Length: 190
Image (tube, rainbow, N blue to C red; front, top):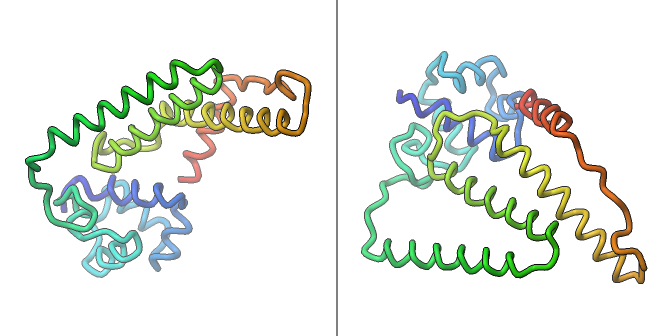
């Protein structure tokens, strides 16, 4: 079995937002055995591979690291690949230009963090940064982006209800140590 299997298995579980205990129960194995599979300490049998493929809705080729496509098969170079890449780059550039035109620094910052997180998530979904466990570098921006966007939603809601204040409340900035502690708690669940 390839060395990609453990990290792919772990990534699929985390994408579903499951801890090892829940995934193991759903897959009818012990949490310890799932941990061994995810850490590369044991190799599963065919029955488990089939169950995991059904559970995560992926092909065995994908789960075993033999294909980049979740449904199986291999990507073939597209004659339109350059055109698609160009469209994506132009769209991304236009989005950043639009965000730069916004008056609200908080909105701009929150939206940029969300875009960066989305691009990184796509990178991870297509097998980039293989073998990486929980992303502390990504957790901090995601938490901050969520807080910023929620504050902005509440501010707009308050304005629509006739609030006079520029912002209806002040969100105390979380210290980086508090966010790191939060990220550590999430990491322990996984």
